[in-house]
Image: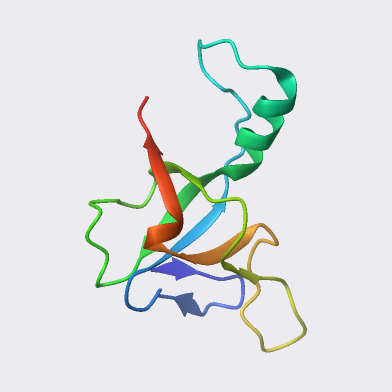
Length: 102
């Protein structure tokens, strides 16, 4: 479950995962051309919360790589709405391609 600035909380339903864009753009120790590195860093996300039907073993704090398209963006809005980071979104578990191991 993730808390919002308005004191509300978000809990993904079914097999959905709540993510935010990863802050780190580090690709690792493998040489990757710069254009590919930019694409990969834009698809790296941190898991914030998981739905009850997720079977992948992900936990909040895990870093994952997702598909290029998909997910429902949750953007800041007016008074009374759940205000969250503009880079926060909900995606289906099946749109997660890999878990990043550190």
